Amino acid sequence: MFAAHHLSSNVAAERFKGLLKYMDPEKYRIFVFARQASAAAPVEHLASSPGMRIIALPGHCVGSESSARSSLLTLASAFARSLPFRERDDSAQATSWLVQALAEADRLCRERVAAGEHCVAIGTYSPVDSLIAASNLASRYGIGCMQDFRDGLVFEALGKPGKLRNLLRTLIERRVVENCDLITSVSGPLVDDFRRRYPHKTAKVLPNGFDPADFERLAGDADGVRRANAILAEHVPAGSTLIGHFGRIGASDGSASLSLDYLVDALNRSGASATGKHLMFVGELTEGERGSIGRATFPVTVIPPVERSVALQLMKHCDKLLLLTGSRVSCATGKLFDYLATGADVVCVTRVWNAATVILKETGAGCALLTDDGDAGIQALREALFGPGAGAQHDISAYNRIVQAGLLDNWISRMVTA
Image (cartoon, rainbow, N blue to C red; front, side, top):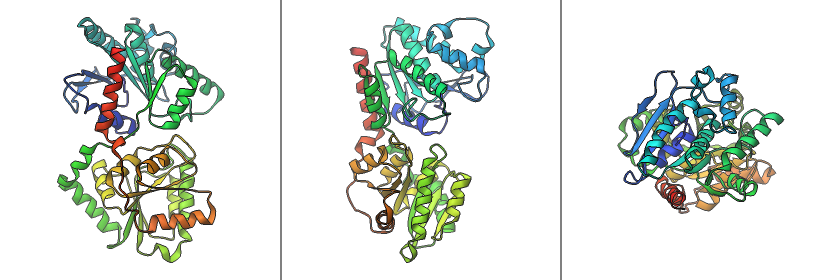
């Protein structure tokens, strides 16, 4: 599995960490090719489950930190798949994570194939280097290949805009999909787009989700309980109805910040209906978002980012949980799945109906309100945030990591027996 981001704490990394830990160690040997910060020799990190090795390799990935020569080598490797396997004294190769990862994967794959084992290469985006590495290894050995897109490389693409960049993204995506057996992505709109553009390929939704083990540990986490209680005692008046928002808002999608502006303006008009209520924002906010919250005339607190264990403890104390999304229809932000696992009602304020709003409707876990619904929408927002909970039974089983790992196991099994 090529997952350059695996040793980070971002949503993409956490998504596959949570899945892989539930894969059967009697059936799978899992090798994760990750990225380390320093240029030292490859480092093997402790894995979260038996049967898994995490190999951290030096080198740059395509992006602002990579030299133009190294980035060009990686991008060219999507079209000339044998290129990164060639041995030569080249500074671009020496600084390329793709080359280092494929050198190690080539050796391991050769051993496993010679031993008569079935192999599958998996690439996770982002970065694009991971997709290219999986495609190249699969092509070299004629093995199964799965390409996972947490975000759209072409559909609602992240990153810098521009005609040339968009063309390059399209060509790269087409090339890495060309020899794969399965495309997965986190939301229906993204998968629908892949099915439309690649009708001869199998595409499946492999959503973000929650790890039940994270929530089972909460009761025994005395330090997390103590720290969460201290934050609440300092910032939230006793007896308040607490509405919490966690994580970033518009740092990845600026249009979500406009939903925050709408929320502040709407609640500023709420007057007495906000009495006894308290909004708490926990996480990294942009300067503009802090300015928006600074205009609030209702009780609100901003807490700097905290460790995940503390954030989960705080979520458990919230009467309602707030989700702010923007104009991306594929958006199903990672925090939503932790929200689902708490059991509290979720209120989503959004500029468009998107993957997150579909999940709320399917699970019965909350409601969504559009920012352009006028006065009726403002009244509905007040009722959703400040009114009693719906009390409905939430069916969130599809977003449980254990269930999702079962799906992944089934898909991989079909790939190697087809």
